[in-house]
Figure 1: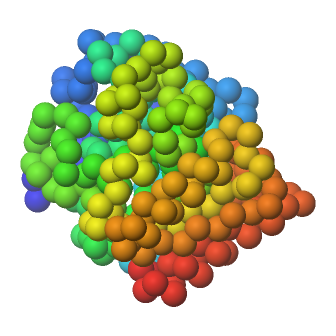
Figure 2: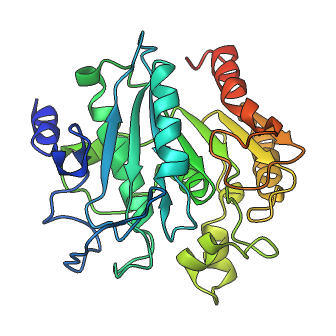
Length: 299
């Protein structure tokens, strides 16, 4: 009862989503340094300067499949492509019967005292989502995560380091497991190690000069264990931003650890295609993902 009441008192309608969940009480936002900044939302739906991390909730349009999913947009950890990635995907998944939670997270280079604030927001979000399973009517063991590009890196981190607390516990919600039950990674950034450490995500998290130890600590392929959740990966071979080698490395690590996974490589499509780039086979990934989720009996 405490957890449900806590969440309901944090609903915040002023962002255009009447059922937003605010992740943190403003007194306990980790690494905040009392930052107050005005959010910036571009005409295309790209957001920056987030100081109130939150979840947009999309309840199932039709018959519920009793599963929930956290959606994380990319943007190199410098902005969040809600308009192109997170929101369209949330609406698609809503129609498939999911209870969807779209994450709006803090960005590392905006004055916080730690660059790992996206990890804190993501981990907190997973705890909250699991705490609300009875309230929203989905199974607590059918909670997944999907991320695009840098959002795919964040989803990968949350899928592999869920035993690592990224912030001191603030309430009873933080005692709940943040482990996703399945993971969907779309053209993800995975490795922070040369020669793949040229992405904006790498620069935002680690800067230009970082130690090999720091690079390894944030390279998802090195964090995979047999406890990593079943994973679906989709990537285009001609991706000029996040090399397809990122997904291949992760796929190999998952296989090595005997983790159920499927990797789909499209011949073209580039980067940042969201639900798919018209005229390419990347438009097939949502249907392929749903097929995989059903074949593996995840949903």
